[in-house]
Image (cartoon, rainbow, N blue to C red; front, side, top):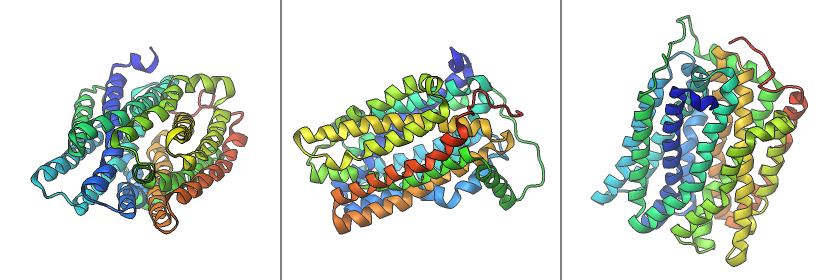
Amino acid sequence: MGALGNRDFRRLWLADLASQLGSRIDVLAVPLLAVTTLGASVFEVSLLRTAEYLPYLVLGLQVGAWCDRVRHRPVLIAADLGRALLIASIPVAALLGVLGLPHLLAVVLGVGLLGVFFDIAHQTYVPRLVSREDLPDANARLQTNRSMAAVAGPGVAGLIVQGLGNAAALAVDAVSYLWSALWLRRIETPDVRPAARERRLLREIAEGLRVVRGNRVLLAISAHGGVSSFFQSAHLAIVVVFLSRDVGLSPWAIGLLGTASLTGALAAGLTARRLGERLGQARALWGSAVLFGLAYQLYPFTGRGWALACYVVAGFFTSYSVIVLSVFGLGFQQTLAPPELLGRVNSISQTFIYGAAPLGSLMGGVLASAFGMRVTLHIAAAGVLASAVLMLGARQAGDALSPSTTTRTR
């Protein structure tokens, strides 16, 4: 059974599945709530995504150093419970008739802050539950969760929003975080606190930065993640508004379109490991970066009727490639980074990716307000394609290197 033969990893896997499904619901429900209920402009909607990822830009590196000092399971549980409370406040405020855009922005900012702690602790926790030999399978299983959520989430969210409203969809999201926390509490593997020693935050952050800067594979992964995330975020900040206002789709249709286009994520979760075995993990990483950029070029041509196929085809190949990028990128990080620095190395990659997101989202809103949404989608697509060049470093340095053959001291 591989990683799933580990009972505690199964619990982590079930917790992750619930959390991923809930997160996919609010990706659709929050911007639709802002547009349809609060009458937000396209720039104001872009501010929501900016607020979600701003904490990574401000605190990502510090959280990585902190996560190398503490036990991870309590951090994961506390983050889930906090996010459940914050998300639940939205439907409560809506029922009381006091929901406004400032409340929505504050919740999104708080959820983003807790997400920084959760994501970095989660990536660092996995190698403590499974053996090194099972890491590729464990990462693939977790990415399959992401794939299933990507496929099911938009359709489920669209149906809930269409039938019961945005507030009900967000209530389901809050319950998913509670479900995740309950499964995490059942993990029995001792979560040992790292040995106490003199610590200085800036020195610890610098240690992690030196590891990434000194390894061409890790540096290429982080650089590509940051640049592609910047332009992808410009796209994501406006695409729901584009589909709703310019293309004229209903919430249910937007959700269905997202589900159809994201089947590539499910295919990637099922085939990524075999792809790495056949091509080599470095080549699979570089090839998926190129495919990601090429597929993005179809998004701006989305329109009514048959032109909707552009969105579906683009979504299939971008979702396929981003899962492959995640599986092998994370595998290289977990294998090449010294265990005592893994939290910091993970936080650097996450800070590049998610720290660029608020800046890209803000740019997307500004460009869409000035030049229109379709022009902005073209600019974002060109930037995602250009970022693939940065992954060449991973291919050149990693052709003879793979997580399955590289050794390091655990």
